[in-house]
Amino acid sequence: MMINKALFGGVVKHINFKNILQQTKRQCNNTNTEIGIDTVTNVKESGYLGIQVSFTDKLLFFNKESYDALPIFRILHSPEQTEFPKEYKINEQTMTRMYYKMLTLNIMDKVLYESQRQGRISFYMTNTGEEGLQIGSAAALTLNDVIYAQYREAGVLLWRGYSITDFMNQCYGNYKDTSKGRQMPVHYGSRKLNFVTISSPLTTQLPQAVGTAYALKQSKKKACVVCYFGEGAASEGDAHAAFNFAATLECPILFVCRNNGYAISTSSLEQFKGDGIAARGPAYGIRTIRVDGNDVLAVYNATKAAREFCIETGKPVLIEAMTYRIGHHSTSDDSSAYRSVNEISHWNHNSPIIRFRNYLESINLWCKQQEQQSNESIKESVLRAFKDAEKELKPCWKELFTDVYRTMPKHIRRQLHSMENHVTEFHEHYPLHSFKST
Image (cartoon, rainbow, N blue to C red; front, side, top):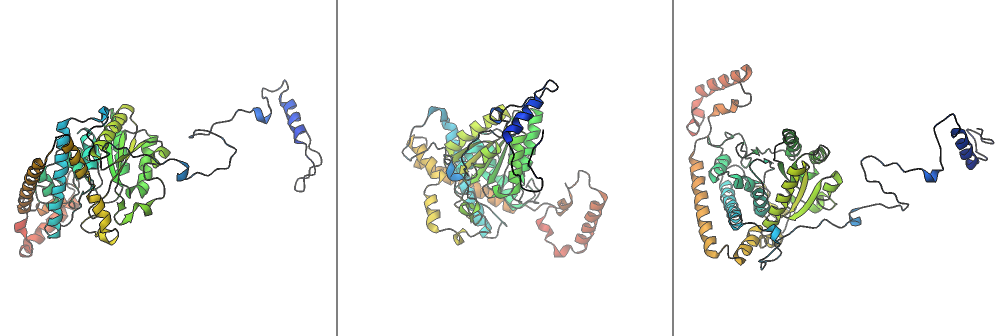
């Protein structure tokens, strides 16, 4: 085969591509080869790996306006609502318990927030406005499910059986605290309740949770991992790694994003420009739903269905729960510097507690007398636990050196002995009466 009148390195004066194709076809279709060449229009299209193939001759770019926004699943539409679809029904005992726990969380928050302001504990983070999200999701889980929380999920732990006394001991860091006073307040953990201890660094729990979910998959246990995080945490690289690992390894994990509108002082409007966090789920190949996080019944039903899918298929699910953080980010924050009083007031009047109470009253499961009695009883028990925890001694200072290794190595033991000698020599300068002796 020859191409005439073509100058390599110069201008091509004439090339008859039709003749080239015919010559090539004749040569390759001879008896000495099994290769056949057909015309280009009859060649079967190859599929590209990892995507659903669909071709178009239109030059199009896509953005969030190209798709409908993901809807928000809701059950409680109005205060007067008394009925909703039968498939979403919850028994009366569970609903009253859910409301009682929401009240308990709210009252405990008020007491511990004020105690920090009085200098009695060092730090605190309230859950105000997010009680429905926490209690609703927790009620749909079992104790076999492993919880990885961020730092605003006290209600999840409360539902699972962590007592008011346990909360108080942890926030005071006394010797009855299971973490032996080593953690900041609100950094709870409970091996008995399958609640992994909270760590301060943002988003570290996401890839760790996926690892645990993969281990559950290998063990073939009928349980899943539930990982809570805020929409601000979803901006961290660890979130991308976790979503991608969970999808590609097909891990039984339920991601619960608390989209409460603010990452400390940064509004969601400044954090991302896409359709929230839920829009990322399908892009990673993760089954996804967006739910009204202030509707405790919607959260319960969405979590229940998501958990069933995780257990049955061994695959991940993403729930974006839309809510609003009514309180400050923490006791170190003043939210009035970045949002208006009117904005907070609006959400205060539409809190998940008020919405759920209105519904329970409309179906005669709750009344003003029960509300008053419950508030008084809960406040009394919280204050009693608060006073008891405050009186307890701090852990023995020697606990500083324990639990780092299963067996204390020589260099740690030398440090312990050095500290013992120091304390013995200068004991008058330390409040040893406030600490356990052994």
